[in-house]
Image (cartoon, rainbow, N blue to C red):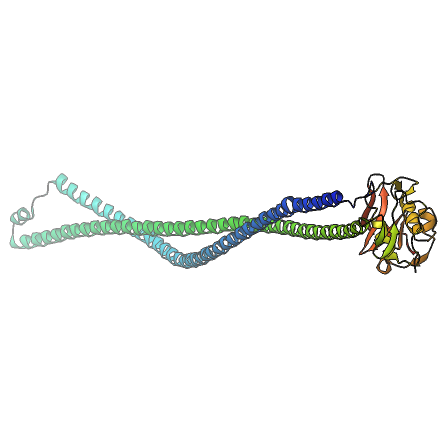
Length: 422
């Protein structure tokens, strides 16, 4: 094999090892790592969904409990309304009781006044008897001087007795009336106080119960607002996590597609290189894909067979992948630039094309799109040109860093496609 070619056994082995290593590293460090990220993201989504379910259950439970409190509030409100009606009736009774007390007070005042009057009369009677030294009723009768005088005295004694008896009875009656009025007044005051206290306590109890229920209801409002705010936060977090998971899965799909494309490209490149290597290793003079060629150390001046196809041209060109790029050069073995590469290859097959990429863009037959391109067509870019080898791929002298390499036909904007062999 000639120096600088990549088709030697060692070169093939190195490329195979490099391809295997790159695919191995991609499998070990790329996709599994991405799979771990996707698994973590899925677990986060599941945890957030579980939190959302738990939070929604709490919300449902609190709403049910709050509804029960609302029912109790309605019941207590109804009870208070009923109690207020009762209070209105009791207040009427209390009002009547107060009127009765006022009447009783007046009666008591009159009874006490009469009692005081009767007491004063009794005092006056006793004082008169004491001051005048009146004798007893028997003495009055014994002092009678005649029968007629006795009858007169007897009548006087009877009148005096009746007067004193009535006076005593009236005093006793009025004293009892005054005591009765006073007792009834005291009882009525007690009833009034008890009724007022009972109403006040019942009203306080119901108002306190209603206040507690309203506080509980408001507390549910606050707790529900907090739970619903948390639900919104969890939903927003879930959307972010789902978006991140979708992004990871999309990146994984792109990486897998890129890995598959790269593996296919490497396999195609390796197959092409192996074919040329096998052909070129038969002898210094032989056949390459049915084309008789002789590859000397210096290809300058060599003329290939006429009547070849574009596929024959690119098959021949691909064997120089890995050789050097030299600006202005036209040697396939010692170095060439992009247009020197295409011009020299075509010249070996008996086709004369311009030297520069700009002029090659104007040479040959125009091809309207990449879909219509065939192997051997020239893909022209701004200041650059390459061979189209099919399946969206090119071979070209890329740069001083890369040399002659394979690549994607769309790696730059295509200005035109020219067909040299019709």
